[in-house]
Image (cartoon, rainbow, N blue to C red):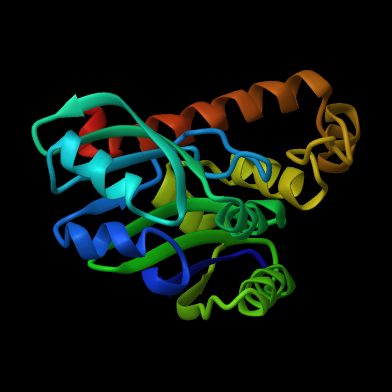
Length: 220
């Protein structure tokens, strides 16, 4: 059953440990609705808590960062493009390589919290085991079973939109390359190809609108 899991990892074992030590006020998050994949995981960070030059200096002295560039500035932070060190890139790639969908990633006071939409517990176990094998201990802060009513309340989706998205996720419609196509997915749901396309487009639009509306202050 699909669930939303909240995971916690300490910066010394995960990433940006030196940056958090140098600038304890930093708050770092992966911006909503930013595409990323296993070969380029979490390439953008929205940062608050210090001026951009201080952030760049902290990133430059952090072993987990290969290179960082400030793309936009605010008084106490900005949007940064980050290239991770090879070992960290491997760890982060393992998170996005599974069937789980990353909903949010945020680091404050030396602690990282990740929210994942997972189709089953096995998917979470793969992530836990890989990270543990590479010296990162992850705590499960909470897990909540997600049904259609939850989706409607949390994301503004209709039951039909939720069913289309979750079925597509389970069948590999969002994988690269895809394990199923739109025609096969429509047939499984008992609707036409056109009806599925319209349903997915509306669902994607709702998710993007809600995610952007609750996004980081860097983008406001």
